[in-house]
Image (cartoon, rainbow, N blue to C red; front, side, top):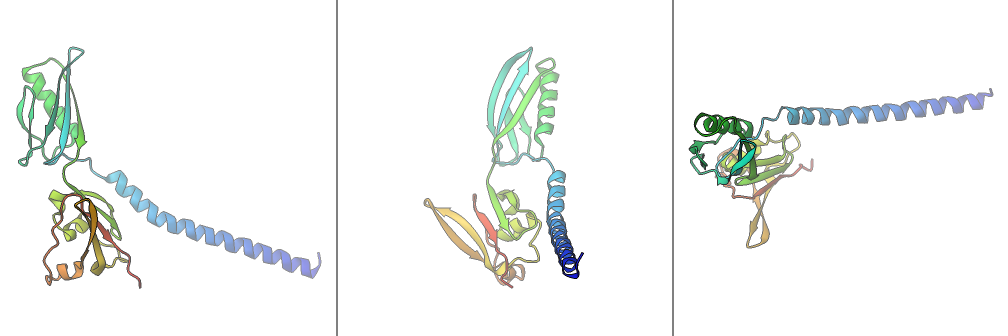
Amino acid sequence: MSAQAGIRSRRLAVGGTTRLGFMARALAAWLVWLLPAAAAFAEAPPYTVAPGDVLEIAIFAGGERQEDASETVAPDGSIQCPFVGTVAVAGMSVAELTSTLQKRLARDYYQDPTVVVSVRQYGAMVSVSGEVRRPGVYRLLEARTALGACALAGGLTDFASPRAVRVMRLRAGKTVVLRVDLTSVRTGRLEGFVLEPGDRIEVPRRLL
């Protein structure tokens, strides 16, 4: 092999190694972002019923459908269930509520009943996106303010711009953009920005 050919071979080898190294670093960076998100998703607790939720309840016994009901969870966290009456449901998962109703019905009304519960409509919610650690949809009842919603979303990332937070709100069929300075809110210079049902909070990335 000539000296020139040997140099070309070494250049190709170095170039290939460089490209492989870049790909490996890119893959590692991607996994750094992906794995925590996947772990958080896997560990997310089951949804729990809250005031404002609309529940569909179907009762089966003796191989036949016995009763259907659509109930909205009252502000005090209760519903009116057929045959059972008032049941406190706020804070229960769907599985827990199903088990509770089956036990109550089996005790007084049916032999081996089956109850199917589903959430047809969720109560007032707000969404948080952008530079927060857990973007998603959260209950207005728990969030209440823009700062509270960001706290529910795991807090701001290191790249967030807290002085330039935007809240998108629907008014008379049009989207209005409202600006919120979370830094001033946190230090007490501004009052907390109170949210309304359907608000969308966006936390932008800082420029520098």
